[in-house]
Length: 190
Image (cartoon, rainbow, N blue to C red):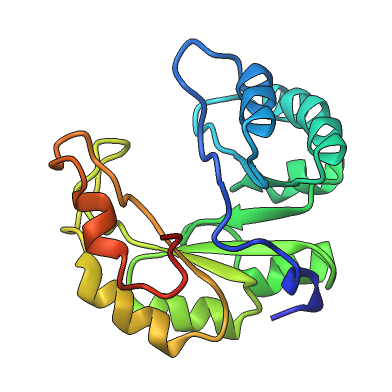
């Protein structure tokens, strides 16, 4: 882990995508006004031009609110716009390559779905890992079943970097089960 994340407020208020119909810059403004400490711009279908334009507009907003700004998947956009970091998937550049390009002072997160992937991401220099999907999700097609809370707890116990659970809420879940399933994790906000 690099020194850049010692003061990062994990687990963050991370925004991985914006509500349909709400422009990302508007959504970022609302989230920051509501107290978000980290924003992650994630839009799998947007052009590089749009991602760059949005990032250039969101970054000064995060600076005004003393928040961090992470770009999903696109190291080129993170570098071009001066974002605080990048969040990489398993099919993106390895964290070791991203670290060479970003340097030691920016944040690298990596999405993982197994204990082995999480440990590898830490070994390659990730500052945090996203782990999951914990519960069923409709946000994208998943070839594998959810990993569940036991795998989450097991993996978290093996890492020395923060672990952020992915897909921890579903509209199909009974009210309150989100909190009940995750409250045993020491890093989860109570």
